[in-house]
Length: 147
Image (cartoon, rainbow, N blue to C red; front, side, top):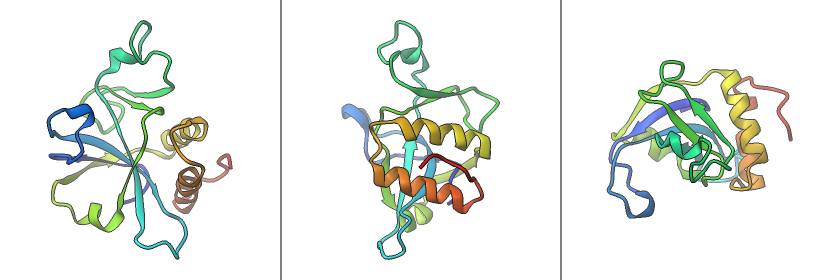
């Protein structure tokens, strides 16, 4: 897996707010950047199809977010990445060997730049995770990102 990969995780084992276990879509943002850190942890974020929550009058209208329009990105529905949501961290090797994970496509470099900008200003991502994501993006050729 590489930064920008979009995948769906069938029967994602961590339902939010007591919801049923269901399929969730994720974006692979990057991984731990220090070679001494073992195991290597992957930083992933999920999306939501509750787009109306982010529009004027919605319960998350004040949240900074990125809206993925259907047809322009590898998602099968319009969905939102909420920068106020905490990212998930999983062992990279476990993700890559998980049979319930299906690769769906890749986000382009410009989209990943915009996503990184949102992460950079987010209070939900630790400084360490931001640095890991920045380093991972640089490793795939996305340069000149805020530090």
